[in-house]
Image (tube, rainbow, N blue to C red):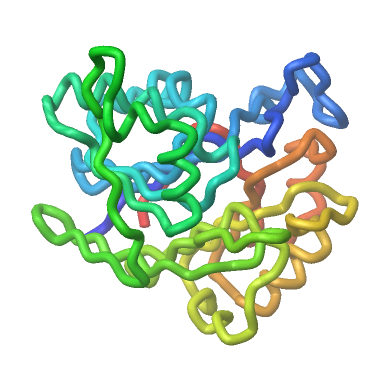
Length: 256
């Protein structure tokens, strides 16, 4: 059974343009250069699993007409992946039940510390989310056919969780390498969605050259570059990448 994958946002931590209206090298006339912060959606029919709650989540869900949400899985604890959590509230109100959230230990601790009211309520507001442990293998088979393998990857001083979905697609939005023992999980997939922050080196993200080298090792059928900084103009990078490598854009959606 096929599922739909949607890239809700493909921008780096400040988005493109950033808050000071700086587009970097990106042509503002190209709509695909407008990038909100990274998040994504896995859809089986009308059952949606959200990856990360970016600060731009409200806009993303409205823009892509997402009206239903089953659960959220988190890659890591950074602000550009978590600070849109309050936008889960409309789904809590709609379903009259807490939204299931899955996160690793460090992300869970951060969420509880920073957004305690979402989990225990306060000031007359009920809790909106239920925190669950993110497991190495997660199976959701009630009206779905969703199997998610969780693979930690280095992201500077922390680990970030990447997700291999139904052994067809890997989502690795924040990393500066892949542990050698885990390379096998990413090889020969149909789709690889991978961090490609900028052309210059960065301590916690892949740059363009590092990204392309990893793609050559992993050999997916198609690679999609995400977490794109203002250094990377959509049309320019499209010209210099191999045929099976394309830059992401907000709202990109496809069947897997």
